[in-house]
Length: 388
Image (tube, rainbow, N blue to C red):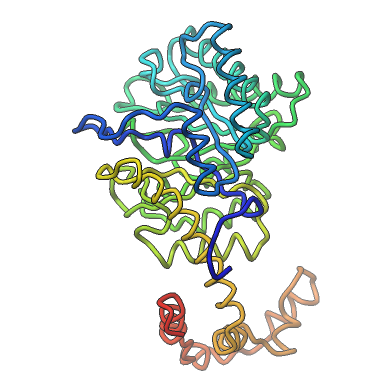
């Protein structure tokens, strides 16, 4: 682990739109040339990635003919085989084309909703053809600038109807595919429907086939709203719904920055990596981030390599944290109970409830206990800084 080199066992993946990002923003034109799909595959192989993920139109232009599609997909599959990369996840672009300017699945226009379903079925076919096992839904235009345009109840029903339809399609085709819903609070719309991972987890049980559907939480999207991302991931994991994950970095309260993983919030990134490794998450570690706009080709490769190297460094730090005798002793002491108290906790029974109601607690002593979190946090800081 000392050289922190990525290997296939780490399952590091990147979207074609990440390393292929040209550095355009709302105030500036592109600063890097567009990379062709085969160039993206070659770049990711060079930095040691495991796989590449894609929107449909990252690979096949929206107006491509069937002959074009066949040729493009064949060339792409050959490149994947040549460079040893896989496609674990796919998704659909339902936000770039002007037809989707007021949403796709939630649009008021039934023609737009039908187009969105058609485009997604075709994209699902493409993803499965390339080997994808997870299909992500990010509703980039599923929202509003003004709520005068539609009822959120209508929007929720339309989104539910679309997912039910697509679940039915996948089942009928016999595809071994799971859906993962990706939440975001805002941008590019003023407000997006189902803005957090928790909202998505509440929505999933209302579907016809909830077992097929989980979540794809993204660091930046929770941090934009000032939330603790690791807590959202833990909730998803506890619900059995962590089907995929997007790694990047973000300062709270800003636009969607999509920084290199670990670029800003080292402690939050550490706890996220530690959680994923501790629970044995076996899915892809997908980096949905962009190189700084200041960078050229060399900077893009440094960005991609840096995402993976940071994850492996933090994985190593997590192992050191778990093996640190002083830290683990303090954590054990904090959770220590006694036989009398332990007997009061656990599953409900009338006997336990009666004993709990009758028990006399030393409340002042509980309030006076020094928990030592300052010292623990300092030990964590020293471990992360390499002085422990």
